[in-house]
Length: 97
Image (cartoon, helix red, strand yellow):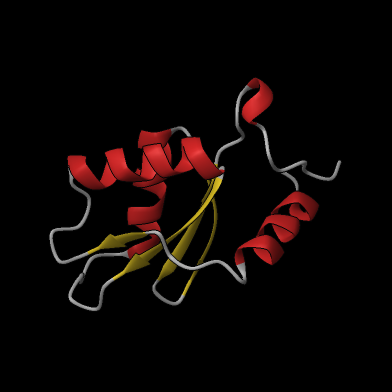
């Protein structure tokens, strides 16, 4: 993913609400499944990490991205944004070249 594409996705995610919430238990199979389903439906998903999670947010983001075959767009504060392109006719977001 190029920096121009990443900047485009960041601008789209700016006005989004977080869909998935991660609590003190961190990454569970349920969280991974919820994020995977949200990515399949929306392509771009914002995740909110609660204050009672004390692990490393960057590491959490990288692990979730690898488990869901997505790209971590950004980590800002306690929010992490993920992107996974849709397949075929489900593709909603057209990235700049």
